[in-house]
Length: 318
Length: 246
Ligand SMILES: Cc1cc2nc3c(=O)[nH]c(=O)nc-3n(C[C@H](O)[C@H](O)[C@H](O)COP(=O)(O)OP(=O)(O)OC[C@H]3O[C@@H](n4cnc5c(N)ncnc54)[C@H](O)[C@@H]3O)c2cc1C
Ligand SMILES: Nc1ncnc2c1ncn2[C@@H]1O[C@H](COP(=O)(O)O)[C@@H](O)[C@H]1O
Image (cartoon, each protein chain N blue to C red):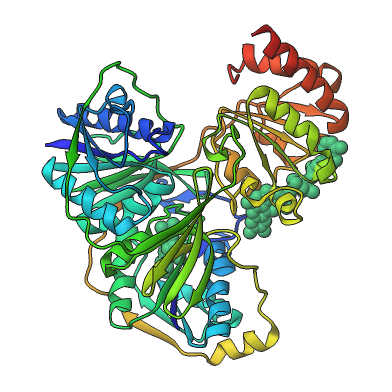
């Protein structure tokens, strides 16, 4: 018996979310007195760090992409059978959301999506519900169990070992989707928002797209990603992929700096998992202050240059 | 084009989130329900647009009790042709998926649309389960779909960019922001919805695979520490030294 974890990668590089899922699987395996087998695909260099994150063995399928969920499901189900795994773990990311539900349906397994805790003795796991406004503890009643792990919720293991990589051949069947092209839209070195540890975000209080220079400058100095409120994306001041909140993306960075955002409940739903929240707003009654760890009541156009100055000094002294 | 849209209900986004019965049940007191925004704004509207250009029929399906009827009528008012309610409690995602799959199996839909996720459970898993149970291709979190003949061209966001995919019908798709613009039902639509067919069918035999143990509320913030605008220059240092956020 072992715990199987699917590890997605981006041109051979495993994002933090994948490695966190491996470390989570390792913790589950320790509870069950067993080991972790990772299943991945395509071209890798070495074990890609999966061993150090907790995998004892890496199975590598010849599939070159995780975009076809039917094919990847067949491979993962075959790997689960070979590894004799009753628990299959994924990251709750683009690939995990695509493939984990299929694997659960195929294995007739209960699935808890976006887990924020390890299973307890009854195999109950916590997850955020009501867009982060509450937490549910859910018990999986089935023999097989699938868990997707919420990124940025678990510590990475780094044990310095390397796992053996074995080629794994399974009948993936015919492809159902064809990838026509991938349009690269993030500029070189830009941090994808869902993975960012630091986020600088701004709202309608910035008055117009011409004032985003300072927001971008602060983000650049700190090495942060930029985000925005929904109206700002809707009027076209900022690109849609920056829209965070209930109807945009959900982020949980270590630091979220909100400038000129009122803090409507739908906005908070996407950011209230952030570890530290800083709110800059000229209205002391702005609801966002209730969710903030640090607040500055003041005009963004006056405050931002001072913060940028402080950030430059901080970086220079580091 | 025969299109199915899976519609779930969700508490209005401003609802107070509280629990009863020893934190085992969502407190519905004073809560108004809406159509889950992803299902309404994106999945349903794009399905209707496809029908308007290609011809065909849009059916909506919900798994739920009689309290689902106003939600389903809203979808009909926006423009769906007919509706089916599978009469069962929404006990768990795999259970719901099995119900939808059992119904869809006999119907030969070309496209099954779902929302990206429900805003109350935030699962993002029912559509993938439906796809596997029906052995159909699945594209998750798509923000664009066009259909020509029996081939769809679909876009979805991936790490660092946008992936363009081609899929032949039948398939399952989950809709994210950008796929369509919200439609407000007009008076004619609302009137017409009253007489559109809404069938109630019995649930297929299935067991829930998970059960809810309890709900809790996230720990409250310890309070906001204010910095004067004059001292804003110290913020970054404080974030580093006190909050360890940098
Ligand atoms: C179903 C539904 C879903 C939604 N989903 C989302 C979502 O996903 N994400 C989202 O963000 N919103 C969402 N909304 C919209 C949400 O309700 C708010 O309308 C929106 O978040 C407000 O954006 P804002 O804070 O940028 O603008 P505003 O509410 O206009 O706030 C601007 C703020 O800037 C401050 N300000 C003005 N000038 C300055 C200055 N010079 N310096 C400092 N501060 C200044 C003001 O005091 C104010 O607090 C949703 C709404 C609904 C109904
Ligand atoms: N009870 C339900 N009836 C019909 N469709 C549903 C139901 N629950 C979920 N769905 C569909 O599945 C999508 C994802 O739901 P979830 O996996 O719960 O986040 C929703 O956006 C709906 O399209």
